[in-house]
Image 1 (cartoon, rainbow, N blue to C red):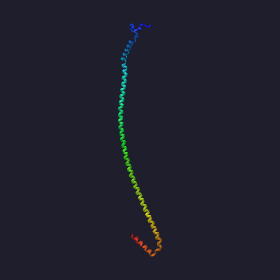
Image 2: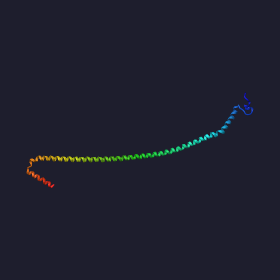
Image 3: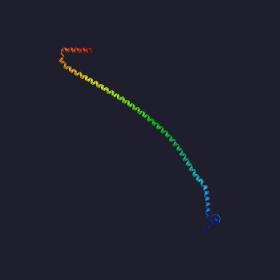
Image 4: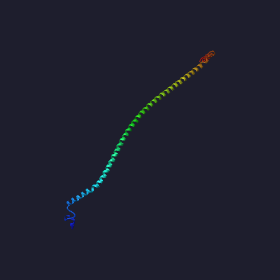
Length: 172
């Protein structure tokens, strides 16, 4: 059997089997314990967590600021690079145009030189052909004269021809 010492109805300290009375007292004890001991423990954990979150936020803001500055610097560098590329492109166009004009000028000069050379070659060839034709004509005339002269030339005519030739040579 159960000893009467365990029941609170007998007076003194004991076990209260009335659920509603016991729950209220137990609940009050638990709430008081939580109110007294839990805030410092949970507060310390929450404070450390708050400090860590604030540090992470500050670090994130610093990284955002640095990233923003780096982005602005990169955009400025990109704009400068685009400008430099455009300048190089323009310089290349001007240089290509100058090279093209110079090439055209040299081509025209070379064509003029080739034309002059061809003209000089043509004139030289014409002079050579003309001289050869004159020599050939003179040779043929001499041959004809030599073949025709022996029969037509007597001693008096030959003497007169020689004296006339000497006289012509003396005047020249």
